[in-house]
Every structure is written in C-alpha cells, then in structure tokens.
Image 1 (cartoon, helix red, strand yellow):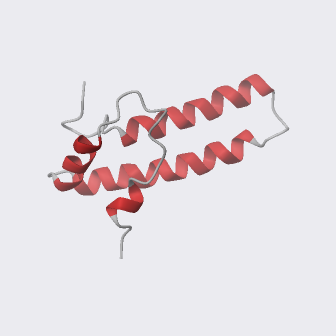
Image 2: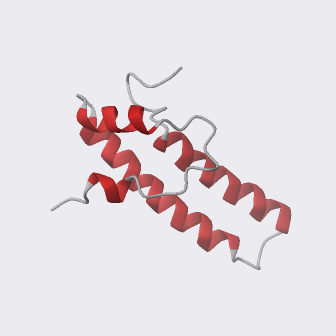
Length: 89
C-alpha cells in the first residue's frame, strides 16, 4: 500500500517560492499523478539526505552549505510540480 497523498504533502511550504496546494492536488488527480507521487517520495529522500549532509564535519562548511541547499532546492522543484510534463515553465 502506498503513502496517502496527505502524508506526501505534509511538509513545510514556507520556503517554497511557488507553492500552490491546488496545483499540487490537481497534479495528484491528473494523468501524471503516479509520477508526481514519485516526485514527492524523492523529495522526502532528498530532505533526509540534506539533513544527513548538514551534519558532516569532514568537508568545508561552504561546500556543505551549498550542497545541502542544492538538495533542498531539488526537493522544492519536485514538490512544486516543475518536472511534470505539464508543469510550470
């Protein structure tokens, strides 16, 4: 059994520049709903990866900050439907 959609959408949206819950829910119900659910699951993994990377002490702090920011940005883009075939330009 897969994750319920509400659980997949249970994340902090305050840092997302283009978050639209209506667009997200429409994407879940649309023809690419399975793809978007996969994107949301990937975003969860990217969040976990960013948390793990932020605790590293074996790399330069600027490198670590940039790397974790890139992971978080990718998670944000996936959540905002940017990589769906009909996603925003």
